[in-house]
Image (cartoon, rainbow, N blue to C red; front, side, top):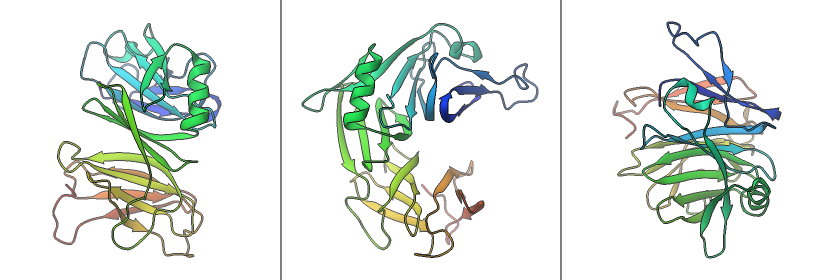
Length: 255
């Protein structure tokens, strides 16, 4: 929320590093490991933030391992130092009857991950709701942080139109979650990996994908992003090293 980046290391013992992109800021040449990953580190994937309380932002971190707990870090302040000093870490634990809680027990978080959400990947926060995916089970989880309950669904379960979302979900971003509630997914593997979209009713659509059995078969889509005016959409094929730019025929924004 203070215009820095978090870069996650997806390796054993990896950390989540804070990076200052502004060359005029004092920390520009000094990226620093944050407290998000804890002292032992892990294979971290993605970070989302709840900045509704600007004096105490809350960060959520996923880990791409079979028992990778979803971590919640409550910062003690705002700004660069908030990710390096103080704060409290808890872990997501699913309970019966689709309830959830944040526990201080790392083992409880790991056990919950192994049972419910192994290999967590993309995550986003919006308006007291946390969305994240578990790639092995191909599941989207939607957490209501007010009621402390959750729902889940298999990605691509309600399909509309051509295409298919048969392989593993990876990264996710949002668009217009207040109204249309679009969630965009990248896809890891399959003979035609693509970018897929979920609407507010839970319907899934293919936005773009590789030709089945073609050059990008077995690849994965990565790096989904919008231009600032949302008239251009970007994604890449990781192994092929190809970046795609997508625009609408009518020139309108993707909202």
